[in-house]
Each structure stands twice: as C-alpha cells, then as structure tokens.
Length: 276
Image (cartoon, rainbow, N blue to C red; front, side, top):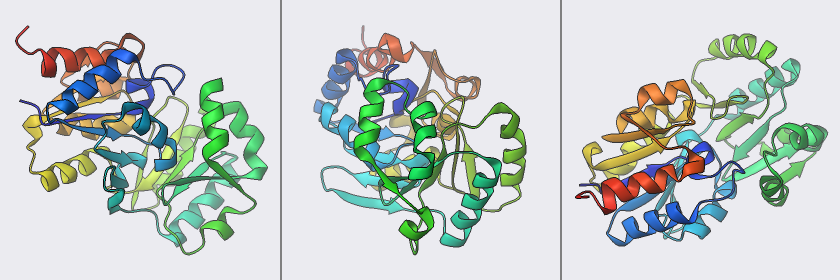
C-alpha cells in the first residue's frame, strides 16, 4: 500500500532533545525500508544538520531540506533540486532583520552560517538541548560578515531562531510586502524565510513524480507550520499529538507524540502489520 514515508525531524521523529531517534522508530523505518519503502527526511534543516540522523538511521533514501528548497539523493550523494533566495533579496532581508533586532542563521549550499556578533544569542535561544548544542557547535560555520561569505550565492533559508512576540506580527507584515517569499514557523518561537514555492509539499510531490509514486502511496508525519503543505498533499498523513494546531488541522490523523514513538508506532501499525 505504501511506497514512501516522509517524516519531519524536530518535534516529530526526533525526541525532545532534537537529537535522539528512539530505537522503536529506528527499527520501524529500517524494517519498512527493507520492504522496499522509500524513506525521506523532510526537514527545515540544511544538509549539515541532517547528516547525523541519516547516518544513525542507515536507511534514508532522500532528504528534503530547508522546507523544500533543496532535495538530495543520499546514496548517490547528489542534489536533485536546489533553489534559493537571490542575492538582492537576501541582502535586503538581512538588513531588515538586523533593524528588527532578530538574530538569524543562514543556510546555503547545505551549510549553516552565523555571524560571530550574534554567537551569544544563538547559545541562549537556538541551542535547544546540551546534545543539540554540541551538534550546532560542530556544524555551524562562524563568519565575520554574511554578505562577504555568501556573495554571489543563493541562500536556501534564513532561520530567525528567536523572534520575540512583540516583533513577530510587525515583522511578518513587513515580510509580506516582499514578493517571492515563503514564511513559516517550524517551532513556536522561530520564523523561517525561504523562496516562494519552496515548501515540503511541493518538494515531496516533485520527488514522488520523479520516482513514479502516487500521493495515495505516501505516508507523511509532521508537527509544525512548515509541515502543513506536506501533510495536506500526502495520501496518508499524521500530525503528532504535540504538534501545532495548523499541523493537526492539515493532517488526516493524529499520531502519538514524538516522546511516545509516534512515528515508529504508526509505521508498525499501517506499514509493517496492517492486518493486525
């Protein structure tokens, strides 16, 4: 019945520390893979923040990254699709975000970049657990100037990792005045900016068309605002019990939380043992 499983990471497959994948979910996804089901990690993260999970699972075929901006074939180690914000746009956005006092990470070509001037704010707001902090310190590239580092390149996503409530609505309104943007939130306190049309649903649909898989053969899991399009598109979709209201409304069903092996339990029930 199912030929592809796509799952978000933070708040969905990963536990509360944003690093751990439970043994039960690992085993379920590996068993599904052994039956010929394609396994896809669909994340707001860039490739550098996904590699560890890909290695831990050992069964991931494709990754949809930065909310659908890029798609990567893991075994072939090639990009199937790469988009991003053009330089005039991201330069304008950088200025806007600095004026608003909002700290941000920038993802480009699969890597994560942070200006040293906001390093302290990252440690306060972006490092979601000690385990995640160690990963962040290892994979993030510190630079003196984003403009100098990224000159001539596209930006996959700008991750405003902490947006105070008082700033959120005015900032969204200002961003709405700029055409060609996709603005969403993967976590309750962040704001993510990428190019319009680059969402997980579009990326998943394109990947399935490439593989000859119908949406009715796709199972998807998510918990956040950046999962809504994917949950609406997939033939069989689950929002996690801990998910945002928008994700729960978009999904066909509710799965147990990320702390209760939600992904693994649903894969067991509907993919591995559908007759039970």
